[in-house]
Image 1 (cartoon, helix red, strand yellow):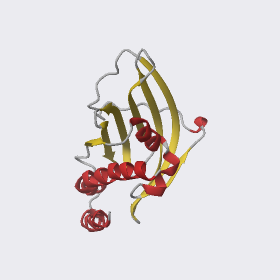
Image 2: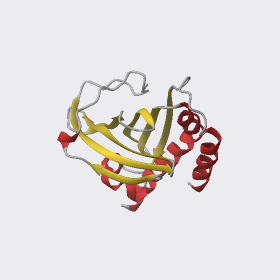
Image 3: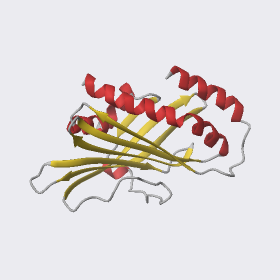
Image 4: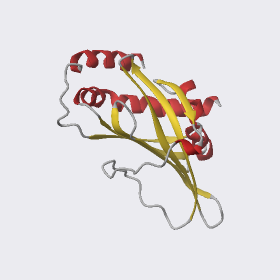
Length: 200
């Protein structure tokens, strides 16, 4: 995490004078791993948003809000997902708003509220086929939109985990900075979730 923070400081000084917004686009960073952790435990850790500030890199505050705090935003089609359509089975769905404060550097910090959707996909016997977690926010000061998605499935080794984060910066300077480091940040985040599963 230290090297990532240092990189952010260097890039911030390099690009801070850039104010043009031309060329800003959606960036997507997928991650996939096979974890020796039960899918139900991974799902519990990922959905325990309030505890994010205790272990997630750059997260300084995390809170689940009352359900009437946020109306569900319209998810923009320019945020791609590689996940296939859900199978014809029983699906349990829960949606709630959550707020996060992220501090990459003192000048690159942000608080935003996301609409979070949890899905448990069950087979005809009631056993879990997979878990899906998605979040979307459009009220960030750094990003015009930011989204993340999880797909957690059982496997012979325990769990197959697919994680994707995508964003569109509001200004070109932020776009240039985050494009350089977001891949590394997303790797650190998924490792932090995996470590958290072994701690709790």
